[in-house]
Image (cartoon, rainbow, N blue to C red; front, side):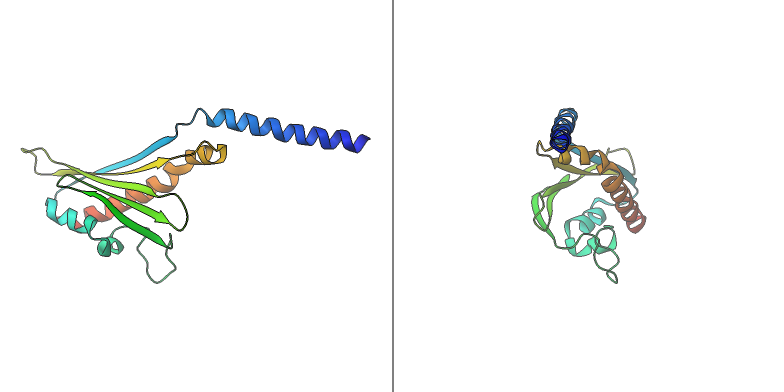
Length: 159
């Protein structure tokens, strides 16, 4: 009889922990955008050729560099969604995971001799508490990778 009480207490505790985690996850938005930008002293064409040609990603994208070791993100499928003069949007999908739209937008003011390249990633999260709460760590993971990629582009395109 005493063991049954402990089992009931354990199951009830798990249920309330799940409810608490779900309630906390409701405070996290279901759409998250991580965005990084860099100023470049380069031509638009020299930047776009690096981004639009996925064959060149191994030169600057941290997930595709270091071919001597296994890829950081294996089995990534890339699909171009939109490609224009000022913006390129591609969907990246790793294995069976949800696809993540990646966009690059270029800003240039006429009198300035530089341009700004923005890289953003959009995450659309399901309501599951573990999905939403894990998104709190996206900035540390993806943000650092994006900063490194933009620094690589700046180094490559530096006139």
